[in-house]
Figure 1 (cartoon, helix red, strand yellow):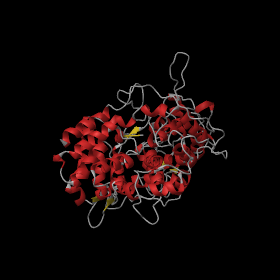
Figure 2: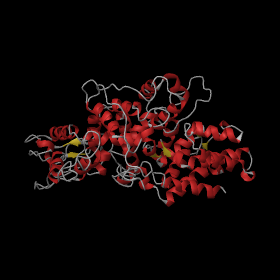
Figure 3: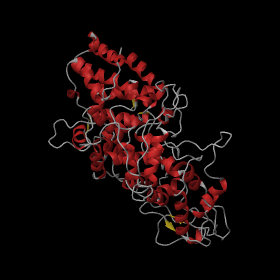
Length: 556
């Protein structure tokens, strides 16, 4: 009975995207930059369903304080006490989790430990989102056998720490730090991108980083309106956001950088890889000629590598395509795959001007995303309910279940529970931090199956194998003794003993009150069956079925 019900519910996930077209929003316009009239629910006094929904968006899964004298800042009780605004402020100030490339536990294990136990939940969520936009994969960094350290892990740990450090900073600074990070230098050939051979003969610089920086990290392929919709010509065709000639111009402007070293190499030669410091500029390998960038801007003739770097990044940062391209993706990762044009426009307005004439303030952008009416309230706006939300990614599926069931990761002795969670996520198609390509685990414009034009990025890695893996992972978490033996501990005593109360508890804390009568009947009938087993097994079965239902799999 368990397996039949599980597969029935799990397969529903692949078909849960509605056939309706894009939603119509009733979100009010901004009164002024940094000010928005709130209609969903007062931010200072959130209800419990609104709080749970907020924690789904701002953490790796809601959790309760369970009577702690001082509820941790990522708990339901704390957010309900201080309100949404203050809860975000508290998260901005939380101590930062870090990654260690020389630790015995790999980065995937460290990531899941932080996701379950880290105090800086919002920072971790934003850094995770940024890692899927400004992509570097551990797989793309070779291990130099002649050195003692594992270069892929050292480089990737440093890169993840950078994203965490800059998660609440300015996007312009983040873009420069990413451009000069040696992990990115290796992954997309920004490092040792020379304009000359050793004999001094000019060569065309490598275009890899310039192309991906424009296409994936900043602008996208097509011009966008500020509300995230494509700019169309009078024939309904999209317009490219840059040209091939501009890719080449950026490649020239970004030439002449190499790994940090005591001195610059001679012309046409490079420094060996090192991941201890940002890359260094070396004029002997830089093309100093003037090149035309975006919007008719030219780099300075006879400019230095650092001067041209600044001109190139400033040019991209000031492009009108960047705010909607980046803001929409951040909304997708945190709240919904199909934000209304009004939602995107409101966030873009803050990216352009945080209220103090500062462009690119990620802290202000994140606050606007999480405080916006489409994100707040017990449920999404009624007119958008059918098309709102996003499929929980494999990593979020794992962490939400563990955190919601009072989970802890026991790392005493040789136990490595983070590795267990990492392997589960990998089996479902998301191997953190090793995305398969520069397009990350899934592209942001992937369609929802049967969605009538709606986007569903996470569905790109959902197939018959990974749907079944979701069922198997959930089964292992709840039923397999090997899970506890690996140090992954959950506490099912937090669920009521009575079957009806158990279902109501799951409706309250897992679905913030949105369980359908159909799902309620399925779960209640299953755990009330004489063959369901003892009380503990009934609880496990209830969690199992609820968490595999579309109502849980699609985070709304």
